[in-house]
Image (cartoon, rainbow, N blue to C red; front, top):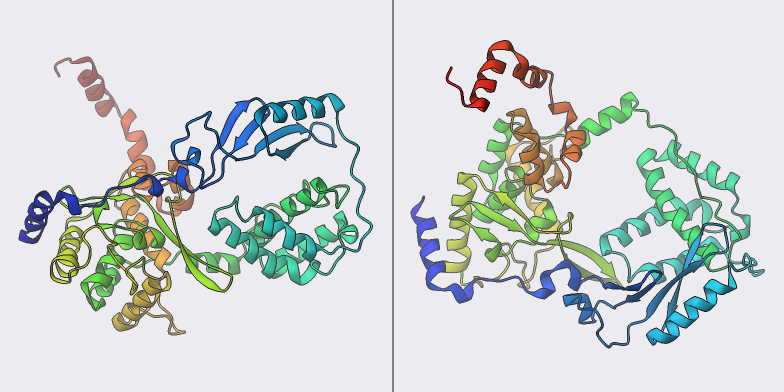
Length: 445
């Protein structure tokens, strides 16, 4: 234990009031409206600002609307209807709709409405229900892949054949991943148009992408996207970091495996340097709304906090950064570990710029004078080094925050080399099996 860490622990014990604590506004339920079940097919859709979305206490009197699940126009389909309440009227309305049976398929509007008109209404209605990062992905897929080819078409002109030709062009020009994202955006958009009565059926329903094939060019692209630094290069990069702050940011991803948004979202109260642990409780995502840059503080990607281990060297450097930033610099002990100029979370472009400068200073650039690794490549390198050293797959998955170790195995399968198979089947070698059995039964050798 270094003297700085000891001093930090003693200061924390003497000033417990300065340590940050997670409030209700830091939890996932405070940022997502709660859907309170009343009875099968009847729910109350509490708004984000409603107290019920925070404590999830049922039966509270509020003005939030009800959601009725009733039969749709097509066999086996269902539709959701919003009812303002009260609950008695909502029950009566649902009983009326159930007794009325399935409505006749809605007639298509005769007005010349284009796909762009539908997209404008669609994004406006789903904006409040989706996470900002998800909404951003949909908007990017629409602008990049859907709008250039389909936005000018009237809804009645969009047929199954046109959709299949469009998806084939996306596969050829942009690749399978772009086609998957574009189809994931277009399909629910057209499904919503059916529910609104603007289309009779969904021409993008049940479209399947062809089986993925990896060409030599795509393989080279994937290898470039997954490029990681070896241990020598990582040492060079850390030596080129101009300040303790930048070094700590880089090492949190390159050694502890944190995502960039999780590094930005760290608060000092999340760190327990005495135990060499950090609680990843939030991530910061940045987007633009009405021309303004807005930083969204959200739960981690998994939806719940996780505990992450810290190497000893990184722990010591974080203690040095605490002494420089808080004790000497006077920043808030309950504040952000890496604050921006305004005192809030730093801009999401700041880590990228700092990494690019450090890579250039270390000489770790390619033939095009670009850095050898991206910020996400630092996290990928952390997992690669752990698995290459033979660390258990489940432990690496916990460190990375993967909900299922199979995700880790699928992404890093190229590191699970053939020698690990010998370790797996060595359990059944005669000597090892005998000793293991005797130890299990408690017998003497």
